[in-house]
Length: 255
Length: 211
Image (cartoon, rainbow over all chains, first blue to last red):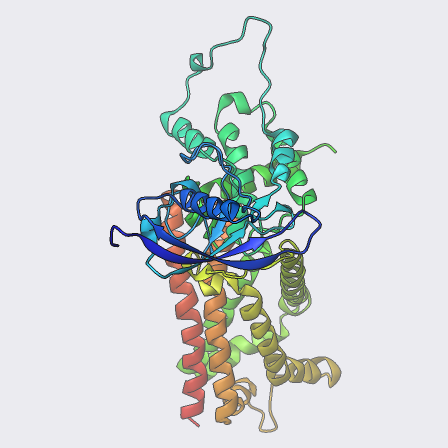
């Protein structure tokens, strides 16, 4: 790409509020540097819109370094765009070509209703987490140091890998069934593998899966698309672990 | 889905082994067919379970597909599912319903006439008018029509696509995913998904060309 930058056509989902009927709108941006992040390119567009008296495009973002899980755009038919292992804020314009047309849409799922433009309500994830994504610890002042419990290195590594899930929702957005299994399984696995998580293990998986179903997410059909698009590389192994935990807990549940 | 899937995988394997015997030995195929067709445990015990298994697999598949479609009420203007998943993993409902339609023809060809002969006409002898076993002869004569052979072969291609995803997916659904064993299961699944339908195609073509 030349130093002059790229000229792009953007097709962006615009929706005034949660109740309004949205539609795709077309915008042009010019002289976009390949070194820009995707969100910086949208900042340029918004500056252009504000300067011409138009409503800027609303989109979620916070840390802009791939940690917070706020950015959530479906770009050219893929969650977080065409790159792998990155969030939207880590996607760079060098992944695109001059004169490209880029489709930018919100993450689509019944459980992720659109709030405005490209912003979706992902509080369904919070409610799933509240249903069981926690451990009980003694906070009386005699709290035991977690490191005093020996944990096999492999289990610790796998729990840590599961805990790297930032809850962005790319798995739901990507899945043809809008299933949240990868997210929920990561939240189940990060505790299921550790001794501290054993106490609530049965209730946790049952309650979190029940809440997931209540929220209206679809069912997992193991296409594996979520794992490919996940910016943190959360493994399908977590879904199998949750299925196993769920089956075991279902068999011994008392109510 | 996974449990009925495992059951159907086992059934398909034994079905293939018995059908393949029709290529190797007329007498052997007749003997096995007669045993399978008249053994009370198979006829009154396993056969109803198989029918329930097939209907459950179909019913659950449709139910889940409808529920899953509802989980995304607004479609993407631009979507590239091919970038992250295989066509056959995303379209199990299409390959599954195609297989069910094929089963309709298959039942019309074999199962309904067999039920009619044995349980309506009451002829459990397995013999034709010349006093010989009728099974191989009936099978062989079903593959005279090239269009029917073509439909069978095409259906087996859909079966292969269904199995390519279904085999390994069933293990994942029951919670089995292991660093050492899952790659082996995936390879086994690919071998099963290609070899079994290919074997069925071979059997259909063999009977057609040996008329």
